Length: 415
Image (cartoon, rainbow, N blue to C red; front, side):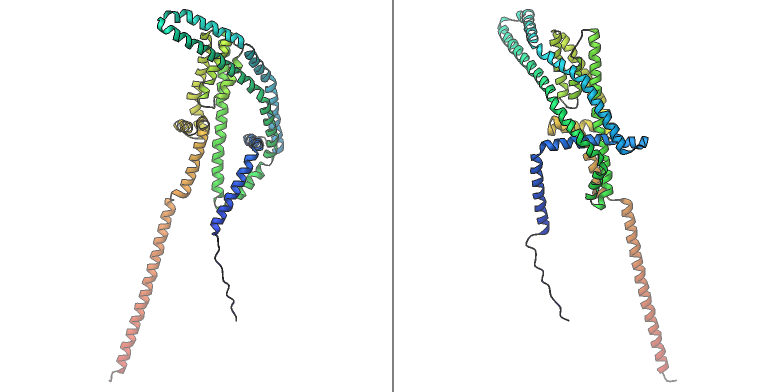
């Protein structure tokens, strides 16, 4: 039979290297494409976030009331849209009216600053030595003009922010519509993602995904709870202050600013008190009244951030309050305000990933190791027993041959 010899030529390029190059090209094209569609990514990112937040409510309705998933989704979105429409119809005119009133009162605010500067000059600067009066008067004039410009810029910024909410509302509405399609196909998307994962790690990665989902969802719920608590407490104290001291038409604006800035470290301790001082000066014109408002706003922020936040956040993400503070300060040092904002959930997720990786790759199962050691000992013992049996068999054979030799010699001897 003729044999055919096939010569295999060595590959010019290492297959592993070629796969790496192809993956780098694919990632490069993917990142370039994503860079060109930022608006679309924003819409779909918000849509997935909305679907992610609402999916837990839909799942609870299906399990609790035994209703179909489609009916549960319809009910959740109807309640959501009704709440948004009702809240917009009630709160938007109030906030826009107060901001417009603030902007229209800017000239009066400038006049009050001038009067306050004159009063300060007459009562305090005139009593200091003449060598320092000129310097203090110059500092007062520059501070007066700077305060007026800062107040004007801040109020104009707030007005523009309110106007920009229209485009943000359109973006959120579009994302909400897209999120309906996402939540309807949530199970199919999850199944498709599972099919991509390696089968040997699938169950472990699914458990890890559930842990990360619990951490991220708990963090969002905690932030919403803290911001709402801060806004409600601030509004309640300002309304009580309005009843006892002086009416404050800008209580709602101050409370909204305090609630929106609470998740942002550092800024949540600066912007609400400054807003309270400016609006207090616009409303009454006395610095003592404005300082009272700032103290009330800062006190609420201090209680919520230092007392409630560590406890609520630690329960939400499943870590200790000390870990929450460490993650927040570390994130702020690494990435600034954004790092302080997302430092807690990222650190908690990194902890869960490390625990999984440590248990999967870095540690040894002592029970399994002991069982493996016992099995190896048993196999060695069985091998030794087999060798002993072989030696005994050989010894028996040698003894049998020796007996035969002796018998043959005995037969050969003459009688």
